[in-house]
Length: 239
Image 1 (tube, rainbow, N blue to C red):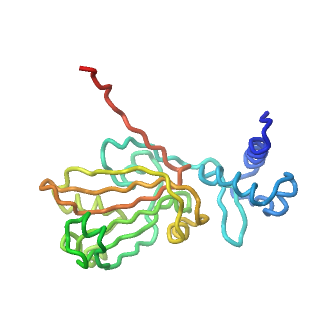
Image 2 (cartoon, rainbow, N blue to C red):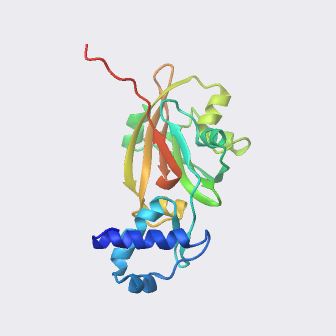
Image 3 (cartoon, rainbow, N blue to C red):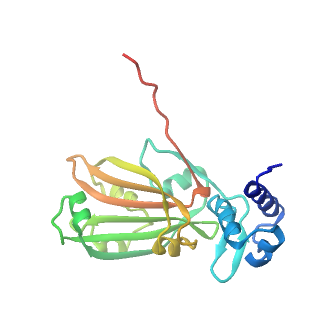
């Protein structure tokens, strides 16, 4: 049994969550903090670990609920595939939530990344992906308007910009991505129904055509407990 106070607190919380049925509500923060003999701030810090694992879910004004063992989407990152494709291959039911499509003007950073003039018209597509009725990823794609018009997505769009471009026949060849941990902003926290500042996995990527043109800037935010990414690498030679 852990001897350090914070480890002991996490062990007590783990035991409480494990014996609580999925969907049940945990005691309120004041009651739980009093029962465990810790401050509410310490309790919230400990509970973040279980929330990022997908084991509990906090709802503003409603309380903290036990999720149970979440479904996991596991994939290698060597090949670019849409979240819908990954979910189907894993056998999970993951569907797109409401899609927000808007026209925006390129700022300095997006203009430089996409190779368009500052102030050029862009299309921004934001949507959540849901598993077991809860949002588990928030995906944002930004594309030049001459690559994708907003009205194109009003008829046939399954939630994946990548799948749409591939089905349309665009000559896409490579993607460069960066993986980081980030804290949820107010916008992202609202879309994922989590607390502002919660830790998320973030994938920032550029999508290239055969000519080297960047046609899509994407930012994908993942609730860690629902995703497991890995990379298979060849062993390098010393020669």
